[in-house]
View 1 (cartoon, rainbow, N blue to C red):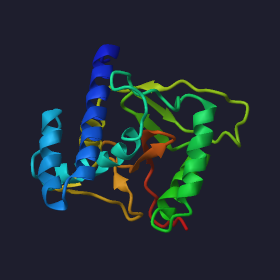
View 2 (cartoon, rainbow, N blue to C red):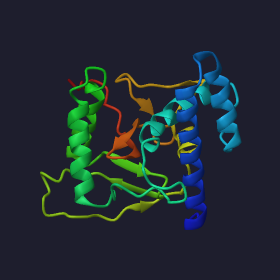
View 3 (tube, rainbow, N blue to C red):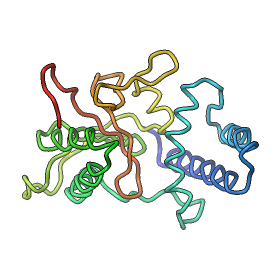
Length: 214
């Protein structure tokens, strides 16, 4: 387990890098933004190689900047958790997020599959920044459960976690028939998105042959 000081330093460095990228993008021309982004990432210790894999990973991590760039906390303060994944309140917010996502035509199929997995108890939520993982539960169906213990996982940054978990075919990320990413360790479907102001990694079983989610 990484110490709280090391984790605080890592989160602060990541936030600083992403905020700097956002500011640079706001003030730079389109022609120079790509090289400036790479230079800033490199300055904060983020892999800046030119492979398609790293380019796509940077795009995924750039989503994080939309949230962290708007934070009002000081740069020396670690990012406060907006959701404890062991608590029923988080699960309520998770379900609300998935229900909203199901209204997006491009994400509806994945969202419905995740809602089905939530109801079946097969949706896994991972938060590598906190070193925690848990099976999600539907608070509407199980209103008496206010919390459940999480399983400890390696505490790591999103860059390393996504590199380890998102399955690749050469330099491209593999996607399932539903359009979801594929977890390279379990073979399950995978989704990287936010609940509140923090990002989480969701995974759920692939549909069995002969079944269809509509």
